[in-house]
Length: 344
Ligand SMILES: [Zn+2]
Ligand SMILES: [Zn+2]
Image 1 (tube, rainbow, N blue to C red):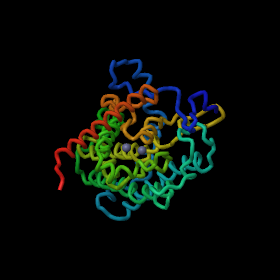
Image 2 (tube, helix red, strand yellow; image 1 turned 90 degrees about the horizontal axis):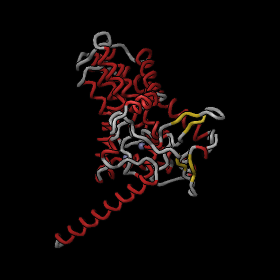
Image 3 (cartoon, helix red, strand yellow; image 1 turned 120 degrees about the horizontal axis):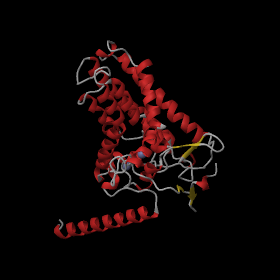
Image 4 (cartoon, rainbow, N blue to C red; image 1 turned 90 degrees about the vertical axis):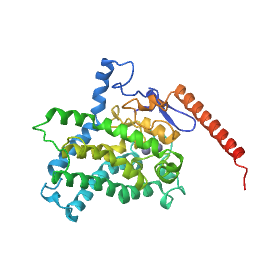
């Protein structure tokens, strides 16, 4: 496919789509029913539908029985860890293999004009982004993801929490299931703003931001504290009436779903003239500019807080202006604290 039909590549090799990013219209003002209807299919397809299907398959064929999960025994806990690791290995691995190892579409539709494997960097373990990212995913990401799953499924097996059956509460459970990607988005926005506070950023979130040129393995490459915060939204299933299938879906949205923002390509080619839109650009801009797009725009959270970057030059100018103001005010507060502090 010809990438120039859909975007432009600048002199530094950075590709950007022609079309500005749009925030989801569900809570955007002025509210427009036609816009909501047009947006809805993209809310489900392809990604959320894939994650829901995956959750159904895991619930039907790869989740231990209720009796088994009543006791915290190592066997089923290890099984869930291996099962989750296998899903991640298959999903992230397939994308990495096709786009970054075999480079099947070369740089076409790739935002950053280089591949992480071609550059060694001291910020990564063993100077390798891929190795660093993969190890962090399996050493702390998957254990913490599985720990949340074990805790919540164990609570369900023992009747702890307001659990509901689809037969008794079909409407509520359907509404809840439909809203889960938005629940994840609101929670992610909140914890993401939190870990961008300077001290937490330095200690915790900088690990994730080391991958300025993200690839699928960057998705869950985080500090363990960020992993703990990241999946804490699933505790909502212990507070609101829910069903274990929704827990699995929710964990897929955050876990496997993290790959969406980190694919690094705007389109994944499936044929000579066909491709899947990845919706990765909003989060790619976060990795590029750090203090924009704390969420992915399904809800207009960044727009409300003044941090939305839709890829246009106007948004870029607004961002630059905001950064200038921030720099000036921190320089002012530094100089006033120097004046107040007479020194030793
Ligand atoms: Zn990221
Ligand atoms: Zn961040």
